[in-house]
Each structure stands twice: as structure tokens, then as C-alpha cells.
Length: 300
Image (cartoon, rainbow, N blue to C red):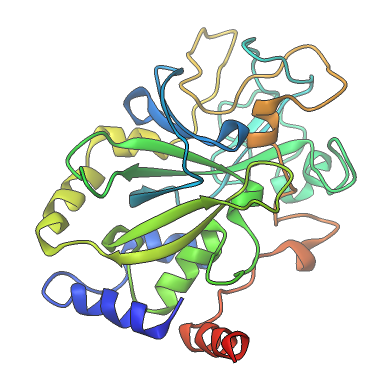
């Protein structure tokens, strides 16, 4: 990404609200979407309505506008393995990845940081955790900002890490925008699959500022119930008969290998780990100038 692009985005926002909004600031520092969501299962962008696929994009990338974001990642722990299509309640879950939600009857620990299920190596494989982490956002399409508000659920591998050739994991991307005093909702964002990753992993990059005439539309969409629901963690609670609204896919009988949906939503460990706290905590994204300098050296 070049400094010219950041300047172009800022210039495009000159006549509308500038600065960093609450969502961008919260994710940088620190639902169900009306039944509509974008899934990355199988390394393909798919639109789901009521849990059923209604469309897919063959391209390895798509553009969106992020209208709302959960301020924290969420967690859920299942005691059994994954079986597609079978619902079962998680043992524990957390909307803020810090402490179990109040509805959890018998949490394995008082805090996520002290829980044995959030320790690196507690899940399948040496680098995974038994407690799965995700981040939620509400997005709209740039060419139809007044259209459907869709939920985007991102696994840990798509959320944390470092910039690579002008592409960022989700939180590092939002940090980069915040460092440049730009709100995520004011930018057309390109999502694309990292073809080097063995599991579906999405990285992000800025495209352009949203058109001035779309600003008020985006602001209204951010206040809708669809956007609010999209960023909320909902879980299937069997004893209460609640619906699973596309939160975490519900595991059931143990299986020997990962299922496709588990690859989407149960990848790498969370950055808040007792045994690897320093190594896993995401660092701030590089500023625009360092990225430009790096690109110049490559071109030379």
C-alpha cells in the first residue's frame, strides 16, 4: 500500500466526518445479521441466508464496507469433536474473550487468561487451543450500501498477525487505519484469501474512500438491528432451546480429523495465552511510511 493511497482516502473524506470512530478505535487498541452472513468455508466467499448457501463468489477476493465491529474477539469451548449439521451446546463461551459470559453455568475458569482450554497446545495439533476464538463484523457491499447487512465471522488466523506486502490480518488492518486517523467504515476494504495458508485465511487491504454520498447511508446501516445482531455472540443452548444463528458451528461426536467448517472457525490459538502471551499478542501495524519504503526497496 502506498502513501498516495492513504492520502487519496483522506482527501476523499475531506468533506465528510473524519477521524477514528469508536469501533475502529476499540479494535485497533485493544449476532446473526438478520440471518445473512458471509462464510469463508472451503476458501470460498459464500453468502448464507438462514444457514443455507444462496450464492458464492468464484474470485479469491471481494470488496466490502465494514459498518460495525465487535470491540473484542469472542470464544467458545466444546468438550466434544465436530460433526457437521449436529447442534450441541458449548461448555463455555465468552463475548469478550476475557471472562465467561454470565449464562455459562459451570465455567472451567474464572477468566479466559487462566483457563487451561485457552493454553497453546490444548486443542488439536501443537499450536491450537481447545477454546476457539473468532471476531465478528457487519459489512455491506460497496455497490449496494443500502442493501443487506451481512455478518462476517473471522477465525483467529484471519484476525492476528503482521502486514505482508500491503495486506493485513483483520485487527492489524484496523490498527493501520487508526494509525492514519481513518475509520474502517469510511473505507472500501478488499478481502482476499491468503493462498499460502493451509486453512481458509482472509487478509485485508484498503481500496478507496467511500463516496461522499454513501456516508450517511453507511452511518444509518451501522445503527440497524441487523448490524447490532451481526456483532453479537450467540450460542446454541440445548437446555433452553435457543437457536444457533450462525455463531459457532456446534460440535458433536469426536472425529479423527478436522471438518471443513472447523478449519474455517477453529484455527490458530488466541493471542491471549498464558504460555505464550508475548509471542501471540498482536503488535501494532506498521505505519504507512514503513510500508512504502519496503515496497520501494523491492521495486529497486
